[in-house]
Image (cartoon, rainbow, N blue to C red):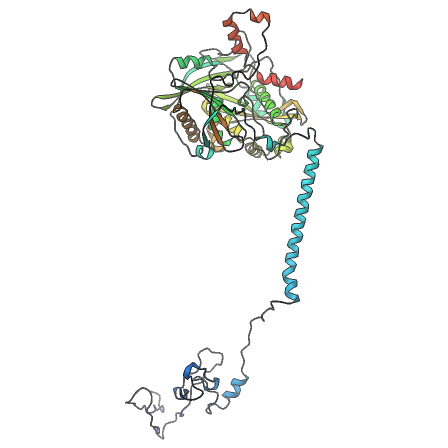
Length: 570
């Protein structure tokens, strides 16, 4: 304890809490002040003074808090301004003020408020007005463009898309609708197929075409003497023989199967004829079906002219693409007579007839314990790598006008080939997916894609080859997000659906306006009288019925695309 420090006397109150009522006089020796209240050192502190319970307001007084009335500010238990112990405290408290740093409240009304609030609104109105004017100007230019075009009364492409590929007859009975959302969820795995029969002959691929560049382009040649066959399933003599031998339950071609497998990527309407004969199922295409042609810019945002006489219409481009595809598949080969022949010759060619380089692989897949599928698959060429033969499929992409695709092949193929392919995948997703599916069905080792362009955008008869690129089908399928399990799931579900129906004839039609396919039950003689046959000349009428039928079967399906192209020239 510090010397000289004395503790004052602490009185005990036996009657309650606090000091006793009697005033106790401290010792004379005490130096502590009497009745001195506590005063904080800083007036900005939030603590406040200690309450003086002796200064509480009498509840019975007129100023008191009886009845819930407010007490006067000077009678607060924390107010020591009137205490004489600190004579300067009252003066200091009366002059002391805290600085208020809050901004003054803004008036809700007045000229300044109206100016600040309405100025951004006027700016937004000006922007919207400019947008409306720009939209009107664009619509005006579009109207002038379509009014000044030839065939101005033709409908636009958007309206022409909403057409069925086949005319729906009133007597047809619609059985079911299958939305694409259901098809995308299907999945089925098949085992490795087996080759039953190989027919035809293949020429070797010329590897010099892999070195073609836009600067070293090659002119696309025409092969009018070679015949190309697009025979449907039931007209195939090999498939008829396999059906009689009960080799399978379901029969189709690779083109029809690829159409089914890639149905969810299609935009245009298409149709497939399905015939249930006994316990067997045949998938066919109609005569003159769009399946024989190749769609161009099917998923493009740029509208194409709809008039058929326009060289850039959808129909004209399909004929041109098929013509380019056939000629390209024959030009990239060695035409020195060296061929790879298989067990049987081309089943659709007559003796001594020059046919295109093609091999038909009849392959069989197991769909169920007692259900097999046989499909005729095509490959166009063969190449030897390390003394091993590899099969190739040959297809060509065609450029008709750079303004429709948005990218010029002659400028971008060497430096930005990936961008060119990405653009084609955007504009022709269904066509590339079908080519990939056909290569997978035929078990081709390489699929070659050629880039063919017009010599001039307004010349649709002369073309040049700008580049040829090879891909492995499985790698390319992964690149374009083509799922093989989903492909076979679609085929398996459609086969199971038709196997539950009665014997008869049906047609599967892709809806032209909705992402779905429809199934119709049609009469047995449907599509047989679509074309009026002209009377045969006398020399042909004198032929034996068997020979005449055989020639009609073989020649009626050869090079139909070239006939359409010649008709377009005339």
